Length: 383
Ligand SMILES: *Cc1c(COP(=O)(O)O)cnc(C)c1O
Image (cartoon, rainbow, N blue to C red; front, side, top):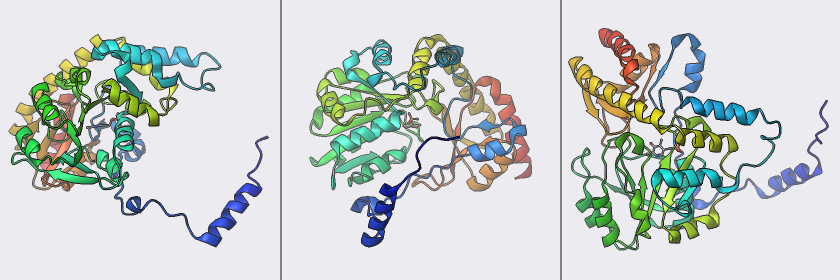
């Protein structure tokens, strides 16, 4: 028996108002916005529980997070009043733990609802209609939606070689009216990286441009520019718990920036936007960094193995410093569909500019490689 009141007059008034005045219209630039296509394989995976799926399409971890993550969540849920209370505001304790992890004062770290939320916060705070944003292509396309939602304009940048960074080319392409530059390091999908010297060069030469460096795959690569936020007022670095740390389903990310940038970001930041279970899980991840060190080693071993084994099967592979690789094929669409019948889910990236013929495949752990190769062999036999 529900005692929750039914919706009453208020809704009736609202619907009459809509009839009189027509449908609400979104902001002009949102009307033509192309939504980020969230191609999720989850529904198909759930349809085939017998398949023991290899989900290699979104660069999530292919194994569960550290055991302490489950223990911490169970401990939390065993207290009866915990889900009805709001989360810890601005993730204070996690921010302190992150301070030790990234070696920055907690004041320079902001925990967000996934790093997507960090990227959106930067766009909301710094971009308005007509602002120009330089983006080396191909890139992580979700970011483009956030900047377009602000009415900002993407300036595509193509270097001559998709697999190498072109810092000097980017420098030349930057007009004094470029508001923001989005660098992904290692880049999804190409694996291109930017080191501190390269980013410092750009920061020095373009003090009025905000540089966003997306380090979603930092743990796999081990090289970061995050220390530069101590000095530079035109840099934001974003990170996530969705990839190496293996808690994509809990939506945990963070950004690091100079005090001046933090001051601006806090104005539009919602301190309750990060859920409590995620806060607890992320803390438990940081409490077991050894587990993740071993995981990265296992992914590294898998990369070495696949870089040898896949070319033997006639596949053209580009390995990245992150946990994914690109494979180039004559018929990527068919390859993806065939692999799916074997329970292997990968991402067709062939429709992105410069990516014709490419699929992106998450690299699993070395223990999962024989199974993956076996399933690929089954597909190759019928292609
Ligand atoms: C996966 C990914 C993200 C999204 O991370 P969340 O923290 O899950 O929002 C951001 N940037 C890049 C480059 C990614 O590949």
